[in-house]
Image 1 (cartoon, rainbow, N blue to C red):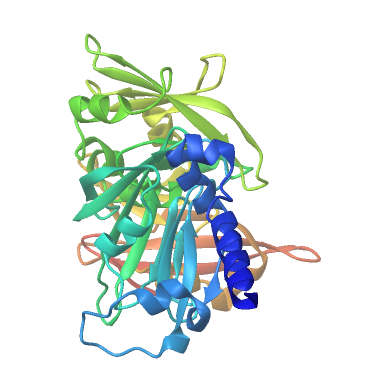
Image 2: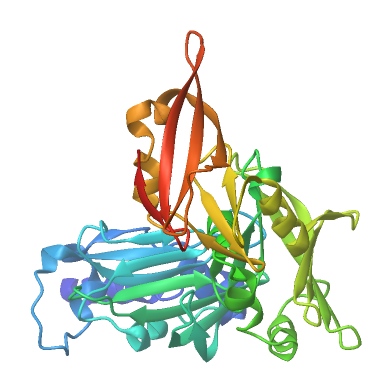
Length: 399
């Protein structure tokens, strides 16, 4: 009789435990999935994680369970720095190999994991499989997710010399740095875009120096007006306004600075003229591509001509350009060589500006530039140097 009473109590307890879900969750199974995803611990030691123990290793490669940990991958949204979407996976290692940029988060994953197994464990907000171009224009098969007007892709990639693969979570957005001349607060904008890319001012100026159009290669050649029109159809109304007549798309954007301040902005993508215009909330232009090119030109001063070549230099940096028939070439291509060129003369520590002139000693074999370095520390003084270039305008030595 006592055994029967105990057995009856146990059954009551079991039945009670099976019905602990909230009324909201029972009415809406999708809501229950969302709640479950958000309440999972950020990271759990692999040795105590049911997820780690249950996944079968089909690779045939061995791993120490102590090297595995359950984690949540997350990235920033394009419209705020908040992170409200995450993916659960099993990481290999300590996380020291992690690659984390704005909008990107990569982690080494266990041999037990792959895109298919991770996607199955993370069904919430899954849209479907898609082809994805990364920042280097390499195509991957990716799982796409969409939440709160932000589009994410999840894919795996191999890196040379690495035994484990990266699991990559990226927000499909573009970050565009403001030009250096107007960027005291290091501002940039972010807006939805099919690839997670960053167009940095440094890369843009470097391509301009070499007579290349960075925007053309890294932006306009990747996607057509039609491609982006389809992409923006997934977003909330008002995120992007497309005009078939003018082949332009006005996209909502968020302006950021590195003090974590944000404000609204927009960017007009002009596919006919391959130009973009960044605007403030009132619709006034902040800058466009043409402003960037003009700003770079203003940074350089002519050192004079020799034959058909004219030399230009930046007064505040060791950067010299040779212009011939409208085309620019960089005289000192090695960045380390530029950085240390006048180091022995104290330029790196107390240099303020410089002047350069094409020397009358220049001849058909070599071109010489006379350099005056202006220094300041407890007084002002000048140091002098001569740069020797070959007949093509390439750096040979500093005297």
